[in-house]
Length: 335
Figure 1 (tube, one colour):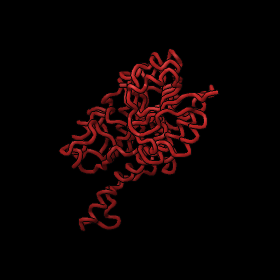
Figure 2 (tube, helix red, strand yellow):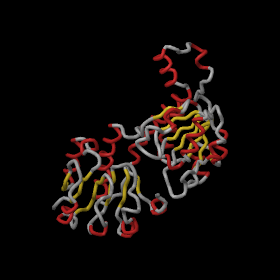
Figure 3 (cartoon, one colour):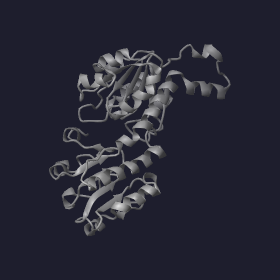
Figure 4 (tube, helix red, strand yellow):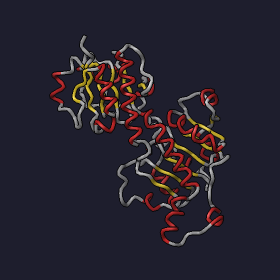
């Protein structure tokens, strides 16, 4: 019996950054793998294979009209988020029971680790302390801690209570933090059962000392944290922008930080690379990271493992368990 045909086109990612050799070997043990090399497959070559392909592993949907792939059962993206509805016909996918899966869960542990690191670095002023020593004007001992903001026993706010929040919570557990969460897509009961207190966004911004922005972008939450919300953040707080800049009025955030209104750790920006003359680069009490929270070598290789695990399940008539499934109610809200 012939093996199911699977198109593996990880472009823009290098194939070996996603798939360890043993995972590719495992994939080939149950699938007839097509392409599986760096770079994009020439689009004209799709014609020869699309009648037989049952799954596509893609760095971003570039395979044209999904209806042209009549045997397709799964689309598995390795870029980091579900394809935009502008490029993928989700209604056709749902009508034809084509699974659309995102590798986003692979990034959760790495992003949570970075979020914790940025929180401690900003709160305890680690970068400022390092720079002071390199200049030779450091302050020694307890006098250097007069303005430190420690994480232990502090109220912590989670803006968004999805996969990133659930990865971060175990890392916060040793610090005995009081956890508060705002997520309009989830019920208060759901949030309480998972260890946080549900609160309105304005209350979270005004009362929490560490504020982690973890929400995914949607058509409903652009600049959800606006200037008025940012003005509620107290001077002794640390604001962590971790998921997407889409969720925050970044111009207002920049102005608040340039004025020194509170501290922050930032990994994501509305334009990347960040313009050289952007004022956030010189804002005081800010720890900046160049959108590197998730894409560690370990996380990328986890993507390959998840793809193989879920693809084997799907081809055997079982549901996927590792990757993030596209739900109609969610993808219709994607920006």
